[in-house]
Image (cartoon, rainbow, N blue to C red; front, side, top):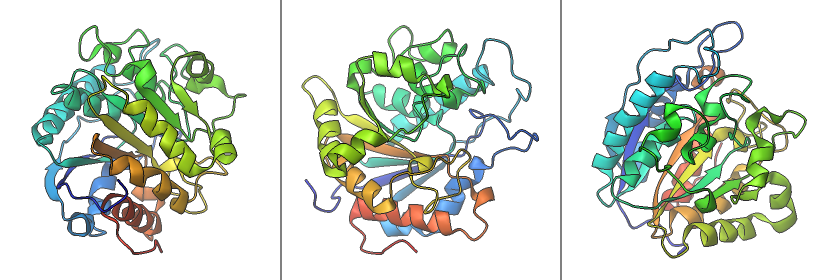
Length: 310
């Protein structure tokens, strides 16, 4: 289970920023640069992967938030369907690595892998719950509500990408590492806590230990009836002392070694379908230190690379 990866690996770039609000001064977040910057770290060769190229998003439109809706709602829906088609085409047995991009790419990834499976588990590793509704979200970004949309919550076409059935069942969802403050409830923390999801907060990780958390997550997403599971990793789950190049850094996160310990048994489980990495912003990483560390993390967790992050 913990040996090196024996499956082939396919990489897809999802260079989308349309699911996240620009900075307050109107500057776009440059998450669209992330796939190529991570490739520049030699990731394709280091993983021995097949590069399937990028799925290009439409341009950002809703600089002014539309009332009661996610920003760029129809654009995110269109992009999610396009990404889903590429994910489904690459889903031929290899482990899939999707390099994002904002967190809303989880919708396209789940929709893509669902084309061959009736029921998919989701391990959502993130500093934030992303469980807001369009009414609750302070930013109006699809990224702030994508986990809720994935389980069919919210009055939005994004909650019904696959018709009336949600992309994932709430009981098949594990949230790992969130440390969003309950005093700022616009990530939908109360709704998340009230549901059947397994909510393994950062505080729970510190109580139980990272290896135990990995085992709990695996147990939830490999139950009978689940046809494989997807892994979402938001770079802001890492402590900003190690990976500062994210748009909403939160203090006291996981160390890279801890995240590697969490991800390795998940990735190398035979029911793991793939992983997406989101929210790394190269614009905030002029010396590419964060890129190098994230690439080393992926190498260690996926193929057992020995190199330590710089």
